[in-house]
Image (tube, rainbow, N blue to C red; front, side, top):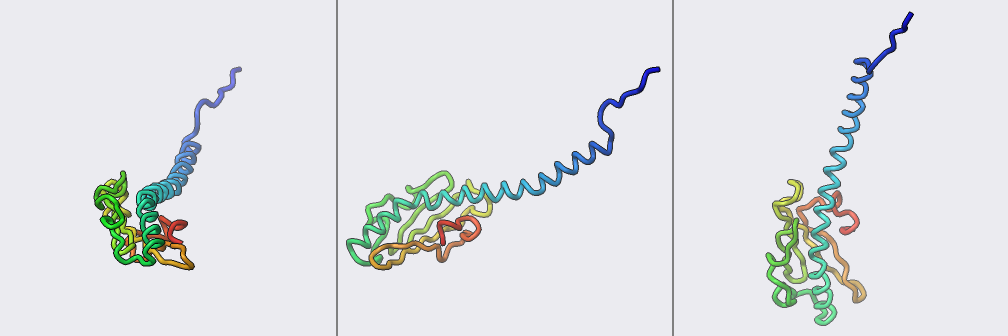
Length: 144
């Protein structure tokens, strides 16, 4: 007498696997999306790093941020300082405004990161006051 051996999976087993995959996807997709926005947002401080250096040098020689602009600092025009996710970097009185391009996630597209300088004991610190980007969520370590 030959025993019938089970071959394949039962419907319940397949439904459990599909449910587990669905739960994992529901958790992973928003986390991945947030990670993508953070990586795109980090392009702003990277592209504007040269402008921050120029503003700090201006402050060390002039003792003030007033008058520090793209032209006075010897920087290229705002639209020329750009990257894959950044459309322009402009400097006005030491304040750097980074505008994100349309290549980014909708959470960043067209928004601005404003890097404001302040001085303390001769050194320049940067803060992200006046930004339209959610700096706490996407640029936490840079904007503290």
